[in-house]
Length: 270
Image 1: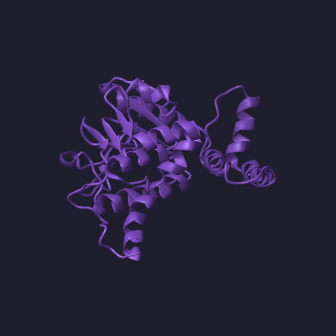
Image 2: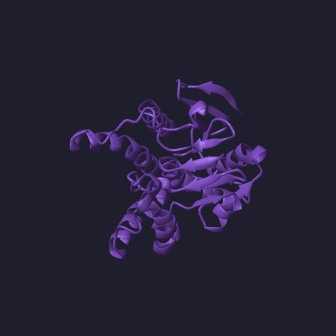
Image 3: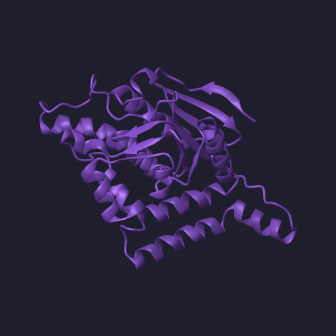
């Protein structure tokens, strides 16, 4: 089942291409989907709204057009400038950080379909998603150093967790851009596909995730995301609580019944 676009504004489109799957599209193709303040706020609003919808069990995040997923910040309309005092600058940078924070904190799994450029803040947005599928035309780069900046919205936190400290330093220190299959070789995407197959493949994988028990997946995501920030005993404690929650769900009972009856389970998210 698919539906037409809903909840759209001038910079973000939301659609439901498959049952239990929503697609969020950054929609500033003339600016290579670069971030301005409106887009930063709109993508967070869209993600938070979908995360509250029981019918949405997986999200695909992508960019409009063939040239870019998100090319970073819109230099003609930046929400922060060097002339700002610290509090203003902190608030401006916080708009970028909120995108990464939201992607990491919502329970709904997010698959990023990277079409074209994902640079700077756009790269960090892709890295904050739970999975990345890239097209052969995709270009991923921590390009902050090229303008004398550091990754202010999470890249220095996310990259070492994904590919290790030394490889993260190489990408951040040099601003090196990875292209197509090279992104997969660096363990930053699960697969590379033809441009015309990108959305279908991302939505198919998202649908596979949506078929799993949503409560368990949300708790899985939280446990994994915190895993490098807590000690083992804390991880055990949080896992015990999560397991207890899962044990009391209808989905757990359904899984046990389906196993006994030799059929596929039908999860409801309860």
